[in-house]
Length: 189
Image (cartoon, rainbow, N blue to C red; front, side, top):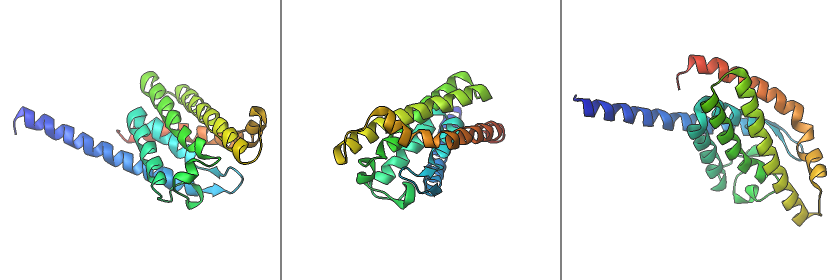
C-alpha cells in the first residue's frame, strides 16, 4: 500500500469510528430518555446522556449524536421520554428542552475541546450548557403554555420547569464529570 492509500485508509477508519460513536451515543440518549420519574416535566436521564456525549465525544460528534436523536424523534421513532416520538412532541410544552440539547452539547463540547477536560472545566461546561438548555426550554414552555392555557411569567415558569430539577441535575453533572474523566482516560475517542 502506498502512502496515499494508507492516509485514505486511516481517514475511512476514523470516519467509521466517528459514525459508530455518534450511533452509540444516540442510542444512549434514547435509552436514558426512558429512565424517568413521571411528573409534568419528567425527571429523566436524558440530560445526563447529553452531558456524556458532549464531554466524551466533543462538540462535533456530540452535537451530531443529539441531532440524530432529535431527528429520529421527529420522524416518529419513540426515542423521547415515555416512549414518545413525532413532531408534536417538539411543539409541545417540553419540546424546547429537547431542542435545547443541541446548544447544550455544542457549548459543553466546545469548552471541553478548547479548555481541556479538567474537572473544573467540565463542571463549568456542563453547567453552562445546561443553563442554556434550561433557558431555551423555559422560554419555549412559556410560549406554548401561554397559547394553550394562559399567560405565565418567567419566574413562575422557572419555578415549575427548572427549580424542582436543580438538585437532580447537579447530581447528573457530578456523575457525568466523573465518568467523562474516567472513561476519557480509558477510551481513546
